[in-house]
Image (cartoon, rainbow, N blue to C red; front, side):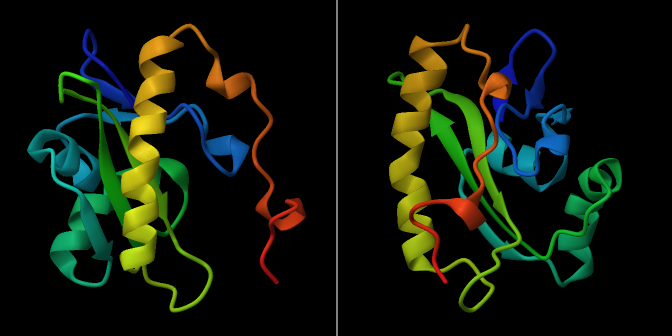
Length: 140
């Protein structure tokens, strides 16, 4: 998600499945907004009522059920949060995000910040969606 200051929303710029690519949410609501405004990463299993309350509005908009979520702020060189990396519904292994997942997400955010900062005109939605099942690096 990239933050648009004028509208104060987080807009999805790259999602799987492709049908979720037009999503936008307030930068101050839900678990994604909480992570954005607090500038703190979250690793959460959505099982208690408080967590469900934070995620339900987006789930309703998308027509999905979020079971677990990993959110990381994307910061520019001035350390301002310019977007969010959200990974939802882990499907392999323990089905919960672990320290390796957190480390990978943490190390991805500077690369994402670079592209969002230096190539803001790029239409990330024009790229074909990544198909993990048919990737050269797919895990059986």
